[in-house]
Image 1 (cartoon, rainbow, N blue to C red):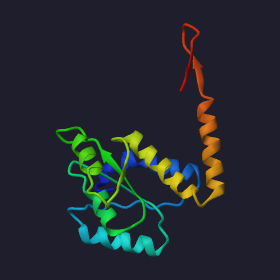
Image 2: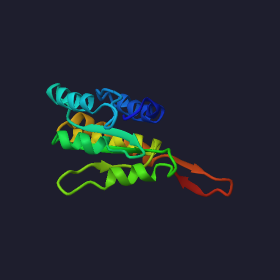
Image 3: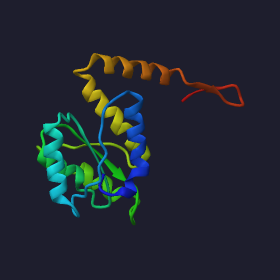
Length: 157
């Protein structure tokens, strides 16, 4: 993530990965304030076996694009809410990548943090049947979440 202030949101990503037993690392490295650290981290992470990168940043939100420029591994960008545009600038900065430099972009904020974990796991599950089975079971359990409102109408959550 680009700033330690992003941790409270990205903690949801970490919790989701932990729930499925997926190993991960969390670091703060800004595309603007610490570009050498970002470059070094991506290089070292690949050497250690990283298969997917999740990059969270707000405002100008160049972190995911910088990471994508340094690797051919999948990169998922999480735009952070904040600033004058409440995260819309981060969303546009993350999603508007030039052709040939893809960044999978998810929603702004907490929903995006959680979905980035799920998307990363879906990518990993292409080569990991045990993880794929866990994700299928999770989807089944989510589909079974039904509540009844005060009028007796079933609501699928």
